[in-house]
Amino acid sequence: MENLMSKDDREIQERRVGRDKLTIEEYKKRMADNEYLDHAIQKIATDLTNYLTR
Image 1 (cartoon, rainbow, N blue to C red):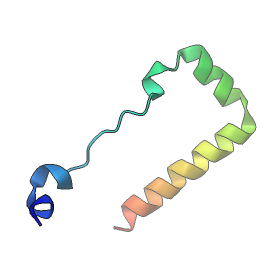
Image 2 (tube, helix red, strand yellow):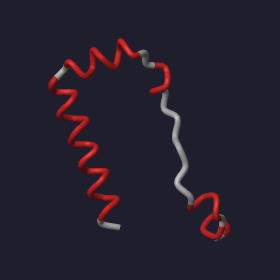
Image 3 (cartoon, helix red, strand yellow):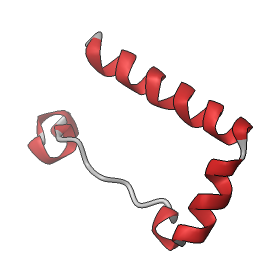
């Protein structure tokens, strides 16, 4: 029950997943892949929909 009362646990926290290690060149390669772009756009749309419907 204490975890539910902690304000820090309720705040949105940034998660570091190793994305910081990618270089600009690696991002350019990913963006050149149409399947990756479709996946990224779908993920962004899903996240926005979930956020806006709260």
